[in-house]
Image 1: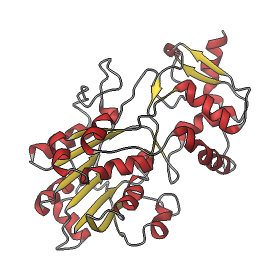
Image 2: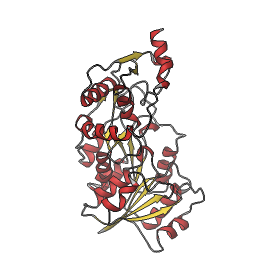
Image 3: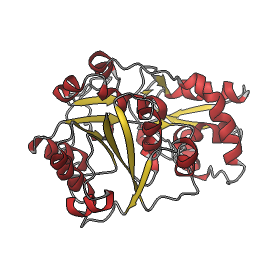
Image 4: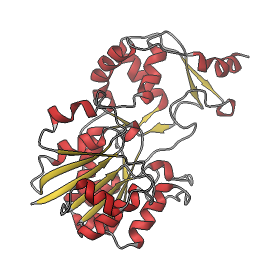
Length: 329
């Protein structure tokens, strides 16, 4: 039986992955104990952190200032407990190979961990025209995530790095991607969508992301050998299809999409102006992973969540006006 450590940041697009991953690992026969190293800057009254105790009661939570640039392996070991060692490490906190990132790598080496699984980002890719973008797509060498990967490999660590994009989920701390569509559809406002709206996007449920992160345990040797994996759904949708699915879910038929030349600007559109998407084919082939969720099926619960959340905030659509004015000029 083996111990697992999940380093979890304070929120944002990856904010619920530690929670979802801990739930997934709690039923894995390989894992006997789970510790979440949680950024102390998180707000315990908000999701997913408010659900830790009720949904993952047997998981140990250790709070730490993960933005502390002076974090060292010695300090991290002291926080986790002298003598604590972890067979498997999932790092969903580090943005580079400094501070907590370097401390985790040094500790993983000292612990002789079987795997160091890093949650990177597909945002490090520099598209070269091939879509979906394979793991061999050129990357931004200056990106902190790339430097983290390079450092781990240089130090001989058993690195496996996943590159997710555009995550949504029930315990999310970031809802902007799909909310953008409902904000306009439910207020009778046009949706300014760049280009022809046929650009594809990989919107992935956090539960699927978590199961993909846990799939490294299916074949540890192959995971380390292959090292880099895209993290996303095979159920790709276009920008216009997201609008149509959201309108159908909300029962609104007179939704209007206004396509515009991307050169006019991005406005508040939540995705990139052009195609930018990955597929999990390599993870499916190498690790035997299969996703279970689709955006179409998830929009039912998502819309109910949206209605309860939007009641507590004011929807500001003024940011669209400049682009819409240029469209009609």
